[in-house]
Image 1 (cartoon, helix red, strand yellow):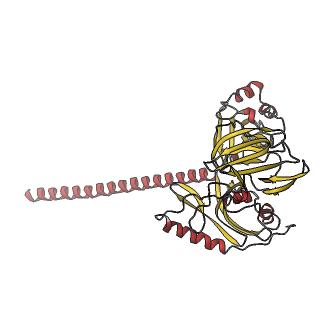
Image 2 (image 1 turned 180 degrees about the vertical axis):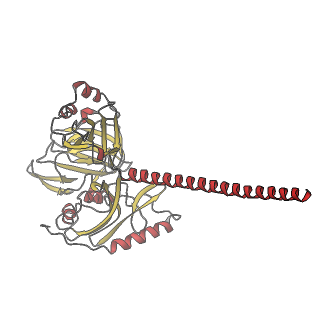
Length: 434
């Protein structure tokens, strides 16, 4: 009886062991299944996330909207057209148009909509063609979005990018024409005259003078716009080479020559963007109106009526008025205890300008005209040193502070690199027919 009991006990123990092993196998299987399920879910989730991300990435946005989901009609604002005139073309009710025009002027003044500016209407792509948004392009970079459902009006800016370019050319007739001949914007000629305005007389540049430019042009959606930054420049004239290297010192970016001296002086070389000199400083000039010889203690700049006239330096307006048999509309500015300048024959004064005003260098004080004793539009510009007239073309101009000793090592690295690049730029000949 004892032996049989032992056999039963042994069998029971074996059964329990087998059951334990089976249970362990099942448990492990469950765990593996759960892990695979979790991994599968994670993989599916990641795949979904990637797919969603790709979908979002591939969606084309313009004006801050998914443009591909709309039917877009492009248009142009016509002369004397109002916002109401444009929106009526697309079936909007008078009340809806009125509500849209009530947007705050701080966002957009609908009365300042301009002829020639592009606009667009965004509608459903189905047969209803229900309009949803009206877009007004205020300029090349900024636009206004009118939500035709909520009457909400917002402003936006197109994404932009700057691309570096370079050009070298030779003056044939004028710097303006040389830029055109080299397939770049003549606005760069004006920018050069501003940068070198204290060191080069752009009224005296001659045929054969050369220039080299490294500049950046701004692009909106890969379209170039008329916005530039000059990164370095050189100009060869009168047997001398002039460099312009931008550098930030004391928080202000100025252009310096290769020696580290600022190109910005106390006085501009000329009070307007360059046009031709029609009469120079002399003690004996034949007056075209009076028909006799007399002194002409100034320089006449021939320019179209309305050309802006600048103060050549900061100072105080000490006189402003009209001389019927003389300078016509004129402005007189005292710059310091030594120098005073006078600007005559103006067609009109800058808005709000009055005696006692402080004006900054390069600030517009008036516009070229032919008032007073004059035979055509020009500016008669005069300079007085200690009360005596001097030749405006020989006025001395002290430059701003040069590169400091602490900044010289950093400036030297920048300058040497840019000068080397400028000197290796090829200069192309400019021809009148190019």
